[in-house]
Length: 96
Image 1: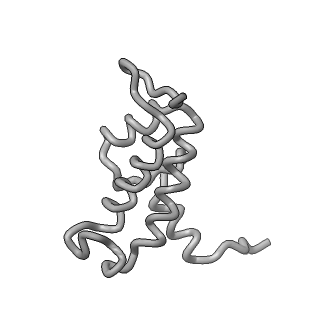
Image 2: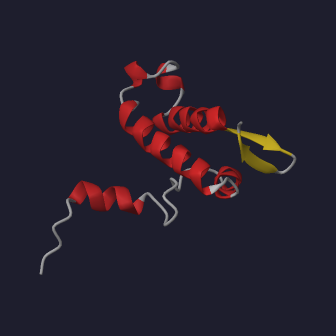
Image 3: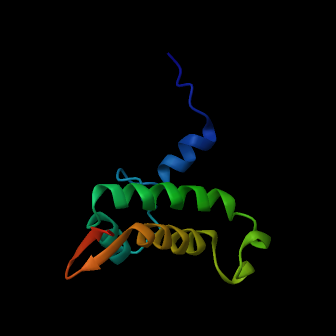
């Protein structure tokens, strides 16, 4: 039975690891994301994925071509996560 997934979907899967974070992220950033609580990871991943799509066009990025869509997406995702979470010591906790 042939696979019904599109070629674009297969290509994007190759760029992603099993945790859903982009392989182009640094090892340090990946480690930070994995250390987040599950809900914070969900916020980060959903925002990151949406921002990657939204900021493909350099005209939509505040920094234009100076920043890649990946850089802008990471900043947006990290900011979204930090709206709901704060770091206390070595742990990220939900804001009250």
